[in-house]
Amino acid sequence: MAGIHSWWKSEDKERFWLEVTRRPDIGSNLKAPQAGENGQEHWSYSLIKHLRPGDVVFHYDGNVQQIVAQSKVVGEHWGDEVLWAARGTSARSAGIEPHTRPGWYHGLEAFNRLNHPVDLEMIRAKKGAIKVIIDDLQTRYGSPLYFPFEVSNRPMRPLQGYLFKFPHALVNLLGMDFAANTVPHPQESVTERPIKDNYRRADEAASVAERDAFSVDPALVERGVRGHAKTQNLFADFLTKQGHVPRSPSADEPNFDIAWQATERHYVAEVKSLTNQNEEKQMRLGLGQVLRYAHTMRELKACPVLIVERKPRDGSWIELCSSLGVLLVWPELLLEQKWPPPLDSL
Image (cartoon, rainbow, N blue to C red):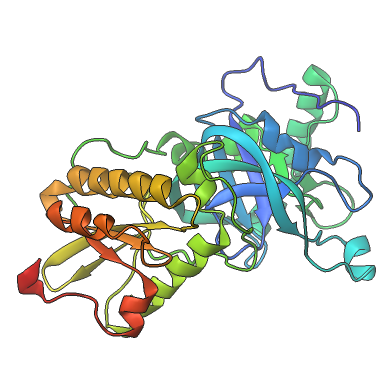
């Protein structure tokens, strides 16, 4: 594959992208294989490497045929294994099943569902104006544009691929400029309002096996680990059975894994997968993260909870968490009904 034609780099306003996906954990991150089934790079995968921190990614959910949400790009891309199978006609005809291969990842934050999703019929209704945008961009910048929609004699639809350049002119045409300009950065100051966004279930099937979570941005990488996803979902299911409503962070909240409210008490939690090799690093990282979340949300008097994949081998972590007012929990405690502790002990 020839190099990417990065026509947008000289334009400050060209900071928008579109992920086209059916993934259940939409907005968790961006991920795609490094090459197609033929072993060759594909531009809709390789574009992940061209994102910049602060770029806005809109999310098109193929299950409902709508642009449903937006996120902000954070940090740099990294390489790791990805579980993937293309959804195009040729891949389906060949019976290709999801399989693990080298992939690209990029972290996201500030996930925010659009108040007014943009559906495919609305996009189709603006076909003439969209054609004008394409012609103008091609005249000014040349090809390819990596445009997300097919414009032909057939009804418009997303092109086969994963990540696309979403031109600023298209953002304006679809009335999404207001949404794009209101993507907040997660607050570093006190969060005063209750946590409200619905829980976004982690995708265990598409997560990869254990890896060194400290080779890039540890918090973003670690959320792609299967042990993390499984532990997080197990705890969310436990909360639901207890009659509580698990939550995920909304755009202007700290990037915690899960939160909930029980009686008058708010709880905010970080989840960590553990191996014998990384336990010390993961426990230190998780403890620091959850204490920061609780401090940021101190107006809610949020109780910090550290959820780990298994009981720490080093028992001093239990004593340390208790001394800091952090609830430490692992799956066996839930199964043995030894958690949560009585409220009067918190």
